[in-house]
Image (cartoon, rainbow, N blue to C red; front, side, top):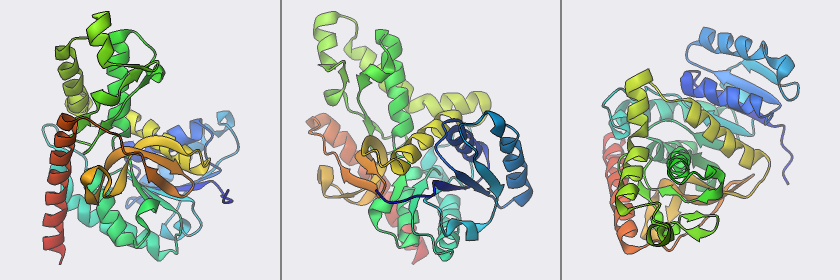
Length: 318
């Protein structure tokens, strides 16, 4: 296992960046945390606030506001920089501004001599993970987007509430775009090892209509939260901490991150949310599920939408 200092840099100290930092500290995942923001005073204030609770943290974690030179010896750089999604706005509508911000940030990170793993948590995450990969020059496995990790936890939460079963005993995934074209993989969802679709046939605890309602609730969850509190950040904060833990601990955990497809599921040359083995090197491999034809068609449509956005960016940047 590669020796790590367990040093993580978070770029962007808005609600998402600080929620990630808070989650990592509370879980005792890191030894060093650097916060970088275009507003240096904001980063300094967040670092001081986090340090105030260090007596209760798991370990003596060094936290400070830094700059891009601090990325040189980091194991992971998490990028959250970008403008936020507004009420009624889709994630893909953020792309023009955020692609420029992402390119600029990644060039600064790589200019430090950084040689670790990039974790992308800016929206639209699938497209921006592709942008970050192109700007970084890193191998595709070392650029990891948050993908559908958050959507998947929402999916399991909704099923758990309906079936009155611990969400940790439910296994299933949302795949594709972290956004409106995401796909619920019902054909590979299990409860205690029992295929979920058997609950419809035998237990009468789920109906076909329930499946549609649940997938819609998952898809619209962010809109519901944004309409009420203007932003989502706790869920993604804990999701990023989970990805960081898998990398730093070389867990080889299967997580639905935004990974580079090179023929898997019949798709190539884009990043999107698929179950992937995550270890100290980033994405070790993609788990290719034998999804049913209807799910495959929806997934292909999701990838097609992402590819169109990527191609439109390529045209404007070349």
